[in-house]
Image (tube, rainbow, N blue to C red; front, side, top):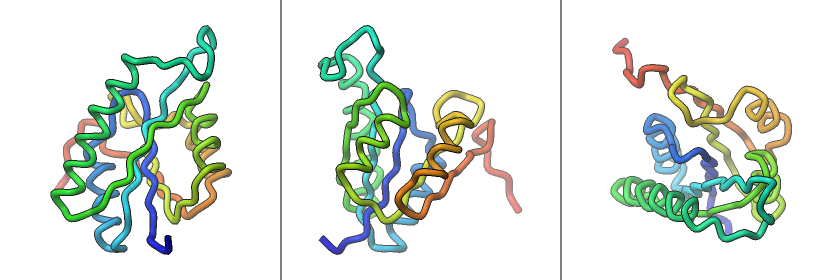
Length: 145
């Protein structure tokens, strides 16, 4: 209680390293807890409470990698998996249950991952906290200034 919490939602089996690095740096600067949240999409052919074991296994591996990266930088982590019929449905459910001080949302980078344009618009319109949408470079290469 009282600690700053930075939500980093992602889905699709990937979180761009640039987005993760930025979220970790922000959490370090604010002495905040990083809350990576894997948004697990439940197809309509399944009940919303279906176990989806394979998808959960992928989510756990990704969240573990995120946790290790953050802990190496001294950033505490409080990981989540949230189910929904769409990314925005899962986010709405998460935002109804918990409070966050910042949201760092990945935009698409051309190689899969990130929220699509429609979802980014929804996030910007409905986010309950200060929100950063980060679009990594399409080829993953950072350019020197």
